[in-house]
Length: 76
Image (tube, rainbow, N blue to C red; front, top):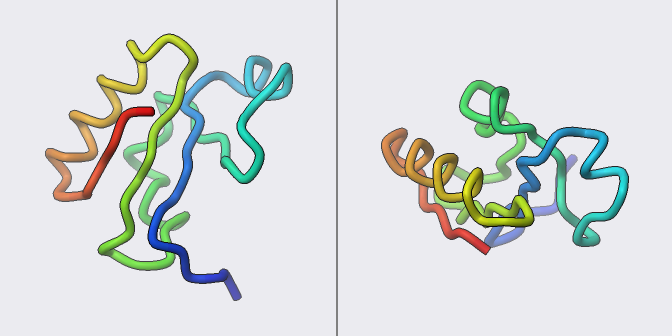
């Protein structure tokens, strides 16, 4: 059973980039897969999704998409 947190930290880079270094506690959901997989990773529908990529370009695109889905999203 997952621990309920107020936020979910997601790294949207490719797995190879994630393996080179990432923020501890983050999960890796690459940009092409996040929309179809994000809800399964959340512990609550009200959970805030914090998105990180390294350069903010991918993060901003993903966050806009998640907001369209009705989720609360923040770019790191």
